[in-house]
Image 1 (tube, rainbow, N blue to C red):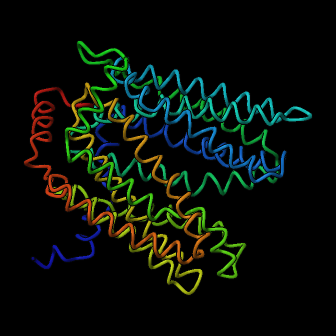
Image 2 (cartoon, rainbow, N blue to C red):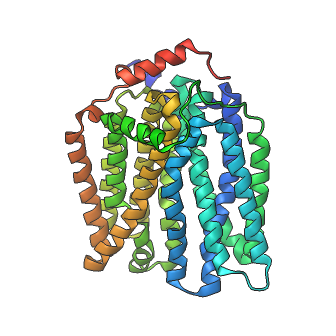
Amino acid sequence: MPDSDRSPLALFRHLRMDLRPLRDSRDFRYLMGSGVITMFGSFLTFVTIPLQMKQLTGSYVAVGLVSLAEFVPMVVFGLWGGAIADALDRRRVVLICEGGLALMAALLTLNALLPRPQVWALYVIAALMASLDSVQRPSLDAMVPRVVRHDQLTAAAALTSFRWNVGAIAGPALAGLIVAGFGPATTYGIDLLTYVVSMALLWRVRAVPPRENAAPATLRSLAEGVRYAMGRPDLTGTYLVDMAAMFFAMSIALYPFLADELGAPKALGLLYSAGAVGALLASLTSGWTRHVRRHGLAVIVAAMVWGLAVFLAALAPSLWAVFACLALAGAADMISGIFRTTIWDQTIPDELRGRLAGIELLSYSSGPMLGNARAGLMADLGGTRFSLGAGGLLCVGAVALMSVLLPKFRTYDAETDEHAVAERTRRAAAPEPA
């Protein structure tokens, strides 16, 4: 390799985040701007609802039931949201749902301003917000391949992950400060304002109409999407590997106990933010990902690193060592997400993209929820460190087994895969987004 290629400047160019989608696509800029603003507001509400529930009831069960109220609509509406995304104008679906979410934020604000805020209203509104988000998300995800060039989809996935991680770090921290200083009504009111600004940006995105002869949103079209996903081992691999990794190694439920065992209960927030910090650093240095072709193998390696990092966290003797391990886990999870999204966006036909986005929503949302339940049960049997360590090792073993059982996923190559080639050829014959 020439000396110039080994220079710090060359290394920086290789690692720096690829910003081409922001430069080249007007509509992607608006989507990113809208996403940054609404993500901030959404994290405020995500943190504030359980905090307000705790203030009103003082009950662990009441707070836990908020997650259940959100989970059921996500399962019910996630797949339907995908079918709707393929049947209707995706931009219109996103705008309508954004308006509905703004209305929910307004209702939360009004409820918080009552002399006696109603507990039942928090459950109902949380469920309605989860429903609207589940309908909106497939349309939002399915818009990206329509507004970004095919060869820039990996970069777009990294930028979207970066946006999410910034919100995951800043949103909860600011929510705690705002709730403590001004109360829940203020945080809900800020969320309402973010939705209004977000809708103004989304309004400027060009229409994304359905393809000609698009299937209506019916049970038959849902079944068609599921059959397509199950008929492609490379797609099945993206779902199964991620769900296995999350089920065995997701352990956020253990963090309060881990902080106590480390003698640093006040550092609980540090443990919660570790994964997002690692993911943020990984996204900032994600330029190298555009040179990777073996995306399936990359997902497998990243998922195994995730499990190994969780296992090492179980052995780490100090708070900062645990933080470093969890940050490494977050970075690996972010890299896995980039390559899974790349496979989805570069190979799924546009007329099915919404329905497959609905399946993706269920796969990456249910895994962490089930994983936290697994972590709690294993900790009850053997303690916090046992649950962390055993979960990490089980993750590595499960992912290794998946890689053996799914050879088409393991050997997936973006340059030669028939679905990637077909979609690339179709995109080359169509005008590129601007």
